[in-house]
Each structure stands twice: as structure tokens, then as C-alpha cells.
Length: 358
Image (cartoon, rainbow, N blue to C red; front, side):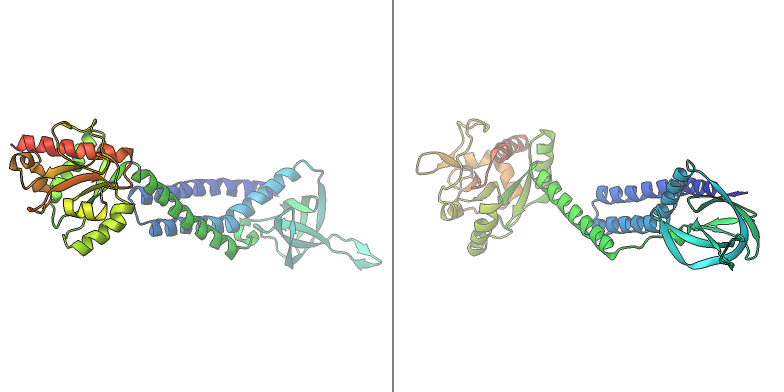
């Protein structure tokens, strides 16, 4: 007696043994793409490919097997009947019973209606393909018209794609859209969270040393301070610098390093006041004040006072400053609390570095 339920159960177990490691590997690949900081577009397409493959696999393999097993598990509690007859063959058309695709086996059980043979039809899940030749006399145990066991049956192949469900292009498109939007949204959230730990610093200079910038960033990280993210003009051309400050400097940056003439022409003191109480050596430093007498910029270089400029000698080793006018450090119009920490930290680093070099 060939028990079809056992065939399905064994195949489902094999399915889990293959699916679980494959799914784990797929998830691991997506996570690895993120940890390796792969491009967002590439990671989104990769994730979409994985989900689409899992959807197609589910529709063609996993879902037909699982639904068939669930149907069999329910039928085991129902009354059964034994049917004997001669196999006449399979009907070409398939039907659906309880959401499971069925193939119809036609039997000659000897029953007649008005003297005419009345073949009996029984359902066999389409994921199963028992090998029973036409003309063979078989004995079948069925519940609700679904075959559970049959004899004789030399072999029964489990072919999940025989009961596969349609793959919807709309679902595939939805998965691709979901992944691209999900990765894009996730990246945006990551960037937003990342920006909360960094402070954009606009630096007006024709040249700078990357080694000094790295030293600054390392010092900030060691002291557990918000990390400055520097952006340089790489020119002192007035038109270019003014455009840079009117866009990036006024809208995105939170700290400014720039010549005094540029500062006066672009911002005219319309920037937040400096936190002099939290700045190192605040009582001995020089500031540029606004019309209300509030300090709005720290003087880092003064061509008229070499001794004062020597206190920030590390500045000259970091960026090129104009020798004929003062060079300032200030908060940008968008400067917030973290920007004040970066401004105080930059002042401290410049003082400490100059002192250690001296």
C-alpha cells in the first residue's frame, strides 16, 4: 500500500533541510552587502532578487507541498472509504480542492447508470505522480474524494511544480519597489543618524593638508566629541567663495573657517554668538563682535600680531590662510549645540597642537 501522506511528509522534511540553509544564506548575503557598505542600488537589487527568487520558489515548490500536507493532515480525521476499480487514465484538466491543485484519476468501478458505465473520479494532489498503468486494478483509500493510499503502486514521484501556483508580475514588481524604497529609506535614516554624530565644517582655503585633518578627526574621536566633517573651497576666488558660503555655508555647514573680509561681506555678523564660557582660554582670546557686542567669531590668525598668531601655529600647518587679513573661526547660521562642541574642540586642538609643536 502506497501511503501518499507519508510521501508528502518526507518531501516536506527534505524541503526544510534545503530551504532553511538557503534562506539563512540569502539573509546573510544581504547583511554582508550592508556591512561591506555596498552601493545602495546594488544592495537593493540584490535584496529584490533574493525576495523574488524566494517568492517564485514558494509559489512553485514550497506552497504546493505545504498546502497539500495541511489538506492531508485534516483528511486523516475524516471517515474513509475503500474504492476498487480498473484504472482508465488521467483527465487532462486539473481542478482545485481546498486551495490544492488536483489531478483527476478515472476508475471503472463497475458501477452503471441506466445500463451505461459510470466511471468514478478521485482526486490526487498534483504534486504527486503515482506510477499506475492504465488497465491496472487498484484498491484506493480515499477521504472526501481525495486519494490517501493506493495499491498496487510501484513508485510515486513527488513533483511540487505539478501543483505550482501562478507567479504574479505585480507581486514581483511590488517586491522590487519595496526593496528599492526600503534600502533608500534605510540609507536615508542611516545618513540622518550619521549626521547627528558629525558636524559639517566649511573651510575657505586654497589648500590644506590631509594629514592634519586626519589628526583632528582622531583627536575628536579619542575625546568622544562629535566628529567634524570638513569641506574645503580649494580657492580664494571671491565669486566662488561667496557662492559656496551662500549655499553650503549658510544652509548645510554648522562651523566656518574663513577670512575676515569674506565673513563680513557674506554674514555681516548674522551668526550665533560663540560659547566663550566653554572655550579654552576664552578670556585671553580675541573675538569679532556683532553690533550688539556679542562675540561671533574667534580670531585664529592676525597678521598684525605674530605672537598671538603663534598660539595657533598648527592652523598654518593645516590650511593655507591669507597673509594680509585675519582668519576666523565662527558658527554658521545653522550652528547648533554639537557645532559649539566642535568649535570649542577645534580651538582646543589648535592650541594644544601649537603648544606641543613649540
